[in-house]
Length: 358
Image (cartoon, rainbow, N blue to C red; front, side, top):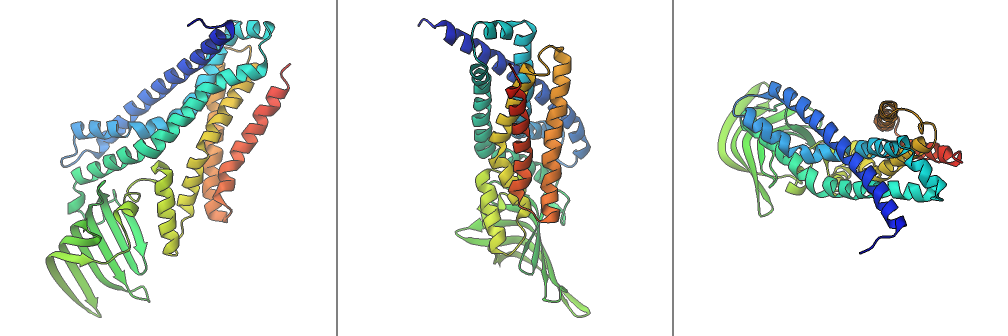
């Protein structure tokens, strides 16, 4: 198949930008894994040793790729287009009659691929591998033997407070602590089960130790198996062990619905939901800013300075979202505003710079 000059040019620019994105992603991911593995050695205990820590790191790779894709798209666009600018290839293209709009589209196509890949990883791969990684680590560290260990999560249902040390992918719970309070918030009973299993719509607690409080008297008992009445399901529980920002869009929506049905605060999960939904737009806007920099104020500077500026802008964008997100929880405004505001401001900034290009 013979390609026209326009098709060759399109493929050249697109492949240059895409290649730069891949290199940036590889470098950032490699550095992150090295430092994360060093930090992980502080958590070695029981059967969680170096081989298990290495497996944990490998399972978290999809989540780390998802986290760094927007940064890779942004810095990669700066580096790829900057390389073309330094060699005067962009100038030659412009002189040959290639419009700014066409060059923007050539550079934006790899970013659209990044957006699609990010959506697929964030929705179908990262939540599963992250949950498996966290659960395996907790179990290997002795989650079923510890009362309310720091590795688990708390949950409330009515007057019952629960803590789960680990939640397996199939919904099996390890290290289940249950605290029952009365209407005056006085502790009525405390139970600890080594494991909880879900079978045919019913929960059973296994190896359960229970202490009840009756005035100044306490009673303790042990049972191999007892039924457990709760509205929780494995689908809901799967999202508990993973941080909100690492969940799928579907998982966030499911848990938000459950929390609201229990009259509980779901704002943290709503913030993560909108941030995830709008991440494709955030990635596209960052790439737009990178393109506007290359055709504007950074068209004749060194590559190192471009990367430095890219890191600064990327950090400012991230910090803006990280600050506005918690602010929406404190001051009670809609989380979608906190997520959209940096995107809209950045888009306007990028468009203004592009309009100044002659």
